[in-house]
Image 1 (tube, helix red, strand yellow):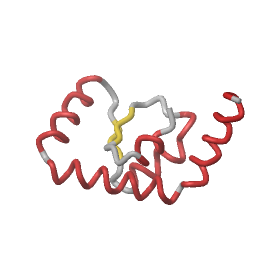
Image 2 (spheres, helix red, strand yellow):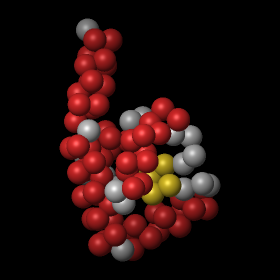
Image 3 (cartoon, helix red, strand yellow):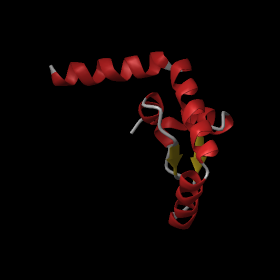
Image 4 (cartoon, helix red, strand yellow):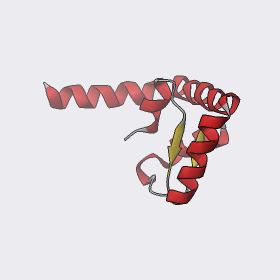
Length: 88
């Protein structure tokens, strides 16, 4: 899935090593402190725990993710257009 979809919904974002379809966007999210990169299930568990126990950190990631999504609106709009063409 496109991580910008979750970002646009004001979600904190976390992803693993297989982001080849969204490399540039994932780099933007990480550099903007809008997403967490986890390499395995153990790191994911730790990151989830930290997000749920630090509401300031959670809110910061959500806000930053939303800002990145807003700066990439054209990508999401193109994604929606492709989906709608396939549906109709």
